[in-house]
Length: 325
Figure 1 (tube, rainbow, N blue to C red):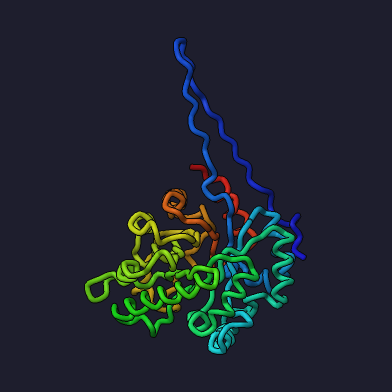
Figure 2: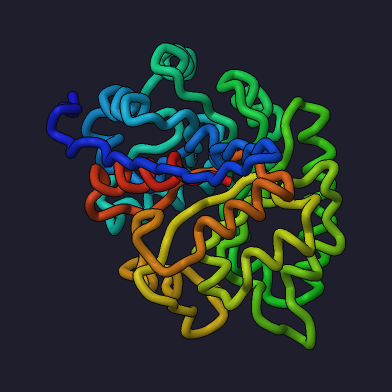
């Protein structure tokens, strides 16, 4: 099991305030500050090697640090065969193979999470599984106690024209209606594509105009949004009813996709510029303040395949848990 004592100590922070009293009046007290992120979460794709080495120990570590929520990724036992085949094809390059329930029986996984105090608000599932096995997805969502399940990205071959984006938005609404009937909401995580002009329009904007926020929720990844030349705060302000979840990771320096961010090769080129939360150049505090004001409910630390996961977990948590607004 991972030894908690091997991790560096929590950083301390102190604050002091001064006020001046007057003879004829009582000074007004400043409104108390609130913590911007009450329940810090983690996207588990950040730490796959730790999960593969010692899943139970890693869950206990997360809870010990202070994390309250996790987001899991597929494929799962109920995923369609194509999802398992794709995963098997890429795992040699990734260097790990665990996903879904991480080798545990579903109820055993839920029991462990309940024991250590971690909840699972959302699952990433592939589009094929949502199309063909939404009943099984709903059962998994209910078993884990989640409220959302959805996709991390649209397959590249399905988003080559604006009409594709329109069609997908309409399909997302239909999946969303079916999901609500099964007790969860469909989430769409945009991976940085669709933020530059195509045929005179911004594809993501076309989708947002057609998506019904009563049945479909957006999950913003602030890193990929910036990489795709989008402004996270502007999207939150312009579409306040849409965004309900957020992936938070930082940039060592401001970088953009070389192209339009259409494919995994472009995504992987920017992996070296990822930073732990608060250790980079993005306005994390400003983005989270806007997100909190516009209805985002779940905030997940994420740094894809973090090279130093222990350090990333601690420093990112320390930063987010100290944010006041």
